[in-house]
Length: 476
Image (cartoon, rainbow, N blue to C red; front, side, top):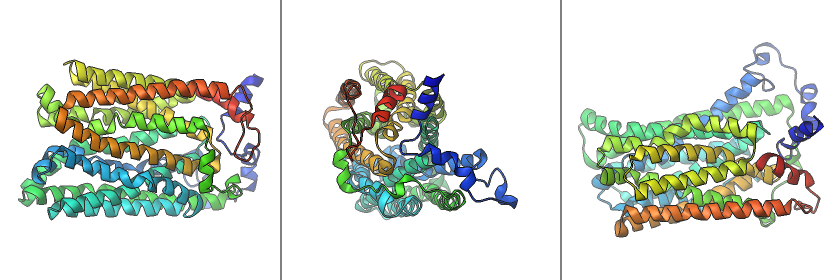
């Protein structure tokens, strides 16, 4: 029983003073009237549930518009007269700015803007980027579409960092895996809706407005951009509720004393860098494939366009309901690293099925969808157990930055491999990336175990044995 109490204590959010947490009710402002209702009181679960909904919707628009090129791949290549390499530049231009800016976005959230203002600023970048992207298509200026994806990328990935930081601010301990799963669920719902409605929207625009070619494409993109405005509205409401909660709860954390510095990055533990690399090698085997997958299913399996879009979007469809379920399971079982390794192995199996067999691709894509959901809700929370709480925004930002460097390079490489060697060689490339992920995870497990036999130390040189014990309790 005593061991169970220790375990419950050790899985609390890093950096949170549980003694101060216990006194929050006595220090908090007394509410009256409507403000004291369950939905309006930040100390009660219904209000936190409302915040969670807004938090999840924060990225709905950016994820919806991120995959608009994949949903209309054939139409873009025909109407804008571009090849696969040029088409994949739309994804590369999204990723390039975030190699640096996503890290800086996390730093700005931690040090300059704060979480609320940072969220609103990055949401505005998403809206402006999508408007420019739509206008570029409408006036047949592909270079403007590429610039627009650059602007869109500045906001999109930094907004994801803000969302992760909000999650750790409002939820902690065992709740984190489930919250990350729910965030992924709503984000991928945006991608799923996009994959399945943008084709019909494109057709409806042609019938209703009587336009063809690039103008038809531009109007379709403008319609999709409405989702970005919706997410901006959610960010404004969430900022108001967070400011109100800070006032009511007199929320003052250790973060007001410990301030992140850019130079602190060099003190990130090696285990965190390994998590970064796992993130890169896994995601480059999923997102670029989905970006090019529609034509793959049309060519290899003779699927009609609607059927190809459906099977290509099944990864996102499955992640919507499965991510919170897997998050809940990981919360109960723990052992995050085991779940990550399992998800990477099954994703590798799905790519092998697509590359070497003619088995119905629904089987492989369903496996990939389950694996992706499992990884997302078990990998990202690991960061919160590895670094100090005041470094979380910067750590998540750096993770997004390295991920985007990989996505930018692989997006261009994937288009080049496809044009020169075809889909078979592209699948072999993705399999190699996943094998690299398994190798890194193996090293991570061995290194972390050996580190935990010695005395762990923080940046300031203080012993951090509690964190080491938490690795064993929650991650393995």
